[in-house]
Each structure stands twice: as C-alpha cells, then as structure tokens.
Amino acid sequence: MMIIVYTVATYLIYLLSKKVYSKWNIPFFHPLLLSPILLIVMITLTHVTADQYMEYSKVLSHLLGPATVAFAVPIYKNIAVVRKNIGTILVSIITGTLVAIFSTFVLSKLIRLSYDFSISILPRSITTPIAIEVSKEIGGLPTLTTVFVIITGVVGGIVGPAVLRWLSIQTPIAKGLALGMGAHGVGTNKAMEYGKQEGTFSSLAMIFAALITLVWGIWLIPYL
Amino acid sequence: MKKLGVIIIQVLFLHVFLFLGIMLKHIIPSPIPSSMYGLLLLFLALLFHIVKLEWVEQGAGWLMAELLLFFIPSAVGIVNYQQIISLQGLEIVVLITVSTIIVMGLTALTADKIAVRKRRRSS
Image (cartoon, each protein chain N blue to C red):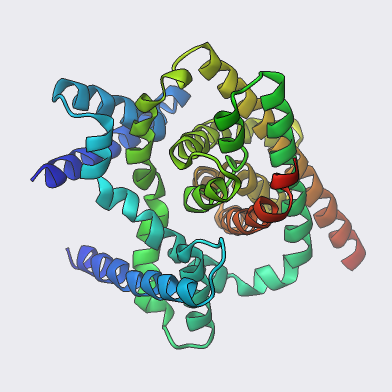
C-alpha cells in the first residue's frame, strides 16, 4: 500500500516539477532539486523517514538498471557515427575522465574533505549505477556518491550551456561529448534540446565515460 | 493507451537483458555492473539481428527520457547527510561547480580541435 502511495506521489511530484521547470526555467526549479525538496516536505509531514521512503519507492530507483541497458539502443542506432568518430570520442573522454578525477581530487584536498567524502566524490561525473560500482571498488559510500552524482548533474545542466557559449564551441560532437562527459544523464537530457546529433554524442560520452572511469577505478584511483 | 501498453511490455522485455547481465556477471566476474553487461548483450543482440529494434525502441526511449525520475528516491536520501546541509555542503557545491566547468571546457575544446582538424584534412 505504502509502496503504491509513495511511488505514485513521486511520479506526480516529478511531473509537476518538470512542468514548473519548463515554464520558468529557473535553475532552482530543476526537477532533481524541486522534486526531492517537495518529497522531503511530504515525508516529514507524514512522519516517514528517508530510509523508509527509499524502500517504498524502490521500484523507481530499480528502473535505473533497465535504463542503463536501454542505452544500447542509441549506440546501435548510431553505430556508423560511432565508427566514424571513435578516435575523437576516445581521446576526448579519456581527457575528460582524467580531468574529472584529478580536479575533484585536488579540490577536495584543498577544502579538506573528510576521508569518506573525498573517496566517495571521485566518481561523481558518471552515471549513477556505474558510479556506485566504482565507489564500492575504491572504498567509498554508495549513497554519498549518488548524492554527489546528482549535484553534478544539476550543476552541469546549468553551467554546461554557459561554458559552451564562453568557449564558443560550434561542432555538435564537442557540445554533445562535453555535456555527457561533464553531467552524465542530466547533461544528455540538455544535449537533446540542442539537437539529435548533440544528444547522440552526449549519450555516447556518458557510456564511454562510465566504462573508462571504471578502468581508472581499478588501476588509477587506488594509487592516488 | 496502446502506446502505454507497448512501453510497459518493452520495459519488461529489457529486464530479460538485465537478468542475462546478472547471469553473465556470475560467469565472468568483474567490477563492471550487471546492467552494463546487459547493455553489451542487448547491443550484440541488436547487431546480430536476434532482437529487432522495434521490440525495444519505445520502452528504451521512455526509460532514457524519464531518467531523472529514477534518481529522485536517492536524492531524498540527502537528508541523511547533515554534513551536506552545512557550510561544508556549500564548499562541496563550489568544488563540483569548478570541477565540472573545467571538465566540460577541456572535453569540449579537445573534441572541437580534433573535429575541426579532421574536417580541414578531408576538405
């Protein structure tokens, strides 16, 4: 019963947030910011703890699994594009993943993050299901990593277009790869607004970034 | 309504690949998550025409379009970390913002350079 109530409530609040965001387009109304805030208010009023709520809405977080599988579809549909640009994709994403890990590492030292936080934050720029695996691999806390991944998505969706404008990036491949690399699924969502090509490159960037970061998680991060 | 039915069936069908991924992970253990194994299996199945694109296209499209929804439950879990809702939290947001700007900037510049050079060479 609770499962149905909270799953439906989450879905409705999500739809509402999406409407609000597309109408006013203020960063604060981002669905990944507004929905959790509304839900936190709701569970506080109904005396449900966050852990209980996460248990009730498990169906939704479970769907991240098949959603990851689903990314095989755009890769397959764009196999010709992948073949033609594989070099550009690999060089850009290897650069991007290394920059992501090192800049996060140096900055977290600079603000003196605690051990748990500084480990859990390293895989923040990749899609959640794989970020969680990397986090486990390197000894981080998966829930904490999820939170950092989400913050990265929200921030990336907001600053991404500005960065592309400042650097006057013109090619769809560069726009797509940057958004998918920097802000995983949320960036890809944004890239789709730019156009089909940007969206494709962004989903490709997201998948390659996840796989390459997985490799760094095994061979590089333990030696930092 | 018919579209909704198609999406539900296709999302369920995508689970087959998720389960195959879980099985494959047992056979070939590695830190790669089972959903990634599933992605690879579905990709190969599409490539070798074992699965037709129409069988999964709408379900996959819906899952990818509503990706944000599936993050929301874990986002609510943020309340369990008081540290984030503090001064340190603000520092973390600044860290992520700075790092993300650098990551996106350098990725975009790298890709742009290669793309422009490639175009020049072919023309």
